[in-house]
Length: 55
Ligand SMILES: [Zn+2]
Image 1 (cartoon, helix red, strand yellow):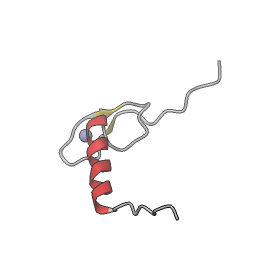
Image 2: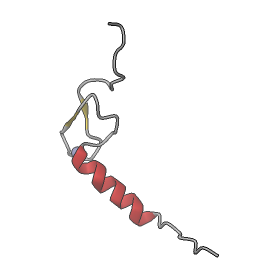
Image 3: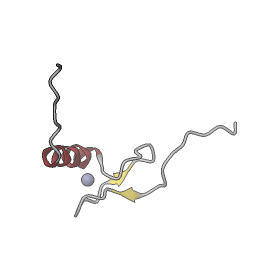
Image 4: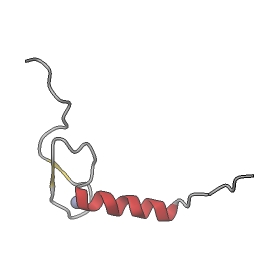
């Protein structure tokens, strides 16, 4: 049984300021599930997606 799932290091904390959530080893993101959504939303507001109309 040498095949292992690729996991992230143990005991990583969420990168969000003042958040002490410990990330799962299966969570390869830098944010916990709560702040991952918030960070994504913030980025979406900064970078507006330009929609091109079909010609
Ligand atoms: Zn967090």
